[in-house]
Picture 1 (cartoon, chains in turn green, yellow):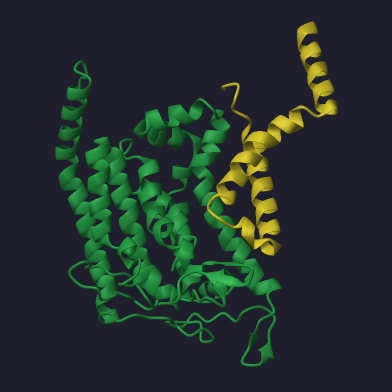
Picture 2 (cartoon, chains in turn orange, blue; picture 1 turned 90 degrees about the vertical axis):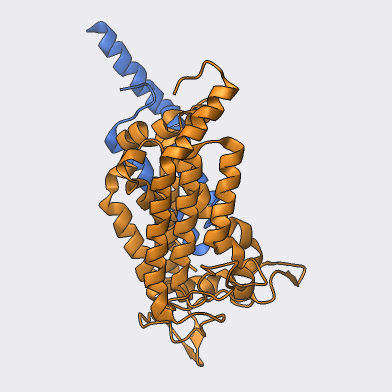
Length: 304
Length: 73
């Protein structure tokens, strides 16, 4: 799985929207779409222990990304279905398109670990995995071992790449951008929040996902490098060893599921990303017309 | 500048305080690192922090002195 990458990609998407969609695609939609796959599936991956009894998935990676399991939550198919439901319900093009882009980004980023995602579900239940780093969620190791393995592998590089992409578009984090583009795309949502929060809190709320991503990246790394004293192969070490080799780190067995040839995965993910962008561009105008028609019916005086 | 805006330096300071305090505490208290507490930490620090500082007795006296000085001018 990916960690802070999912927080940074929200801002990367916001910054790289097609020109005609700027100021019209909902940031809340992008955020909701990007977080939805893990909202739906991750609570049971580590599970909880109450009075010595563990409640959670028996095979975390099967539950999280497989079928049978909650793997469908990380598929483009569910992204399309949920986007259609949101559009049918709210008739909001900006919210729906943002949701689809965020959801697709999450599912495509997660192809990089050793379990991957079912990109062609429901036509195929094979997982598409580039196997760049070990998927490390286990019942015994929990979140700690998972974080240690992720931040000792190419997962760390993935977080840093997304951080750099977001920072290269640093204007997306400025007050001016928030006011001119983000609020403009979601006036009703921000106005509703503005009734209970002052402007500086609203701006902090907009930046909060980036803050959280950067904080967890630094904090988990500091813990894994400076605080943890793991015993690996009978040797107690000062911090978890970093291993940037493919499917690393060497000290963590990589979980996996039946999947396609890893060489196919990155080109397929890039093609799917292109397909999602193309679909969004093609559907933008028809969705806008449907939204206007809906608003006209709802409020007869509404002008396009 | 609206009433709600605060200077860029002060703004950066509050974001810095939020970041350092959250990261340092979270190294030893991992339960803090979650989707709910993280964003809430930032919003609370940046929003509530300045309000608390402005209500400190010595800050209020300094503010009153500045206002009085401005009025005399």
